[in-house]
Figure 1: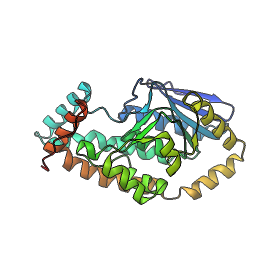
Figure 2 (figure 1 turned 120 degrees about the vertical axis):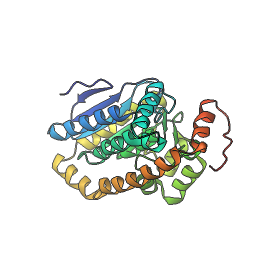
Figure 3 (figure 1 turned 90 degrees about the vertical axis):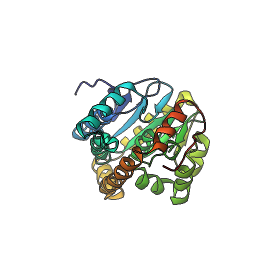
Figure 4 (figure 1 turned 45 degrees about the vertical axis):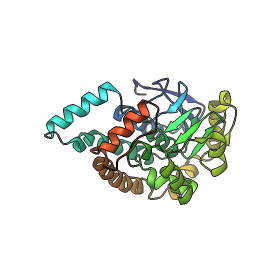
Length: 271
């Protein structure tokens, strides 16, 4: 099995386990999403693995993208320089990120996400890419894009309404509010609610229950249930990227990121 730099991979019985190892907040980038997709594809090729668990170290499951990361800002500055200073074009790498994200939706075997902490922004998108989510009261789920002056991404405009209903998705998108673990369970965003120290164990238990079933039957049934999902996510990310590119160049986006960093209410101007 491939050696990865930002994830750990283990096999327990017929369950493959992927652990994100960027604590405490597990911010994602292209490399991390690519490694998760690679691991899932290896699981697909391993006939002994019938289901998988996606877990994380630290206090967050995945807190999304770190817009204030100096390395990210330096990369985007270089991309912007290459494209004659158009700030929207600095999102070129995110296009590649979404290509990697779609690979996750194309995997063949069921995934259980162990959400022991915050799943924010693209981190929520990653959690929703799984078939099921096990969580706890301390977890927080948020599509906080509009609070950043941004547009939802990671295919959430396609996946979240399917999961919790259009109106509940709109409520999460329009308010950017954080949904507790209990509320996530209530609205169908999570399937299992347990104490925080039992989240991973419960996720492995659910994946093991799935893995007791016929592997051929599982793959066949899942293909039917998720038919067209990856293509819908790809179409959604194409639109999301176009909107993100446009909004990324605005004063409101810069203010949203700054206000989030300074833990205050943003003073948006609509420009």
